[in-house]
Length: 346
Image (cartoon, rainbow, N blue to C red; front, side, top):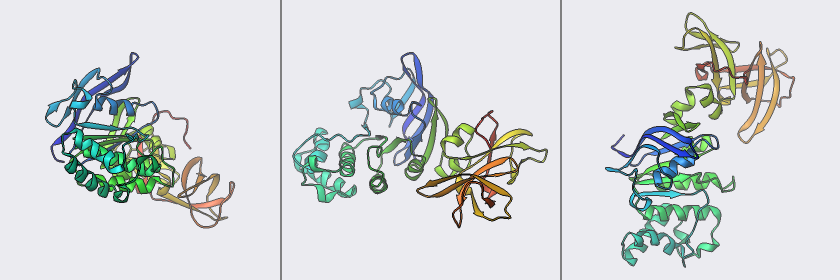
């Protein structure tokens, strides 16, 4: 990682006497994208607003580039904050919308329009340059607002649920365009979303905020494979949560196979995402289907064996509740976390 462009050191944000962001520390390099996920009300937006200077910091420091930005007004920070709903200025053309940000920074009109044209091409919206901004679709507005933000040449770009207002059918294409537009730019990006898959696709690192605290932050593949706690596993979609016991040889024993762990002997929780296993109907199978759920990526089955329940992908013929199935789980993709007394286990 290159030198940090954004550094948060024990940042706390307080609303109404309550700490909504609690001692968050992290650093984001120029050209790096940090994606933050967490449930509603966990402090994601408050953290972005604090970085932008829109919310006061109760404790800690924020550095942007070489400067302590903790007490600087928003316009002096070099950070641009984009809300979920893209807001256009109502100028004559899309090119004028994007050029406005460069002109505010002192660029002559011709230079600002050249910057705008380059950025419109970068966000795959060059054909929209002469359009009236009022005629744009939601996905088009999102790209134009991003281009306008980049025209301000920010050190830090803050994206608050950037695709939340889009139709689900539009989100993948707009997300791909935004990711491509940010590639190679010397800007530190922090985005927040409820969508774990979206965060994993866009972030170079994925951070989990729970109750205002940054509880884990790693590369997406590492974090998805090895959540630190049961709470993180739940948030990341580890639908399989089995109570197990670690034996003296360092294995968590489950009906679906033993799982190596460094946790001490005792009760633990074994977690996995649904794609760690598959099940197919077989009258001689040793597991029973207890629930069936259709998703856009396949059918999920809850299957029970010897009192433990796993959630896996369905394979082959349609399966109903009560059917017997065979189950194959890649135990290398099962992960052991400390027991937290959770009631939602199989």
